[in-house]
Length: 172
Image (cartoon, rainbow, N blue to C red):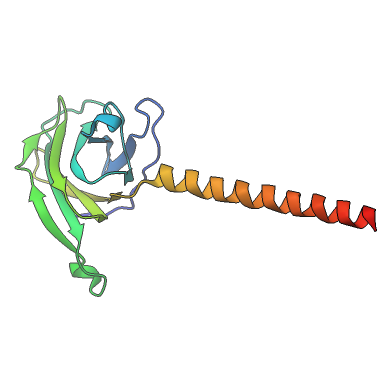
C-alpha cells in the first residue's frame, strides 16, 4: 500500500466539497448531515452537529479499467499510540467506483476526530490508500461568530473608554 499526503481544499462547485488524490485518481468527497437546518449543505473537514453523517466519494474523471473502492470510517480513540490511534467503526464492502460514487454513513454520537480511509484497487490488483481526517460535532461557524462578537464588544468598549477619558481631560 502507498500512503501519500492528502491534498484537500474547499471545492468551487460543491460548496465545501474536498478533493483528494489517491494514486493517480482524483476524487471529490462531499459530506452531508441530515438535520433540517443543515439540509442541502455540503461539509468537508468540519461537521457542525452530532447525528447521522454521510460521506460520498466520486472520481472526477472516468478511467479505463475497473476500479474498486473500500471505505472505512474510524474514530480517534487513543492519543498515546499513533499506530493504533484510530479504531474502525464501520467498513463498506468493496464496490466499483468507475461510473458513479461510493458512500458511507454512520450515526455519530460523540464529538471528536474521525478519519475516512479510502482504499482503491485497480483491475491489476494494485492497491493504494489515502486517509482523510475531519471533525464531527464542532460548530466552527458558530464559534467564529461568537469570537467576532466578543472582539466587537471589546473594540466598542475600548473606543467608549477612550472617548470618556478624552471628555474628562477636556473638562479639567
